[in-house]
Length: 263
Image (cartoon, rainbow, N blue to C red; front, side, top):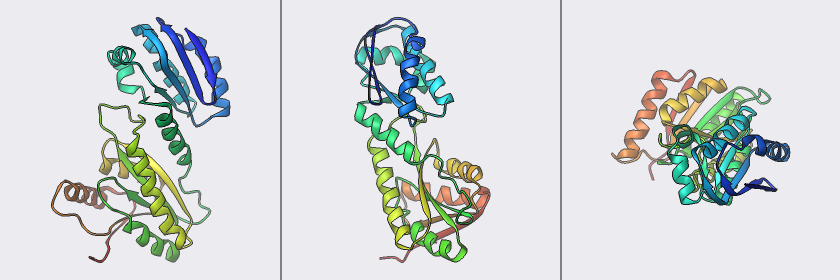
């Protein structure tokens, strides 16, 4: 096996017939010093792999995540991917991207959202959840009014639901790009009101539980959920109703629910 490095990418070529993480680790650590948000392992030129070789990725992921960084494997050939999927630990935990660019997009987004919980500089923390299947940007308008009155710091959090058959930190391509677009839109709303604001992407298995857990972790004083218009009676409506009920029953902070004027 041949190991090459360029920018934030380690490229593997040839055959991977045993666990080679010890041989790769030194090169990976050098890259992580320059790219602490995470690195990519490009497998486009990997010709063959065994079960033992696939465990290279598992050891790499465990070591790198223990150092509070990320690793994403990209461009896995089909026969290599098939072997990886046959190994329970690798199959369930390994974050895989279709391309280097998709991996980089995921790493860039995660690096923008690290360490953004309230720091007390601007007052208590007010959290505004955003979700993919409904327009919750009215929450940003409502949060701006509350933040200015109460000297809050606002944290916009997009809760991206990840299917249970994928690793929680798996790259999600278009879904992550849509999440960033929603965060940017809500961020612009807050900035027009001159309110201190940060953004964050939180990957969760289920939105209701994920929001409650996040509120506990970040010590939020308020959570603001606002819709421009309540959705019709469909799956989005049921999803929103479930979240509202969960927050009212279980949120560890004050809950503010708002709906904008009907158009």
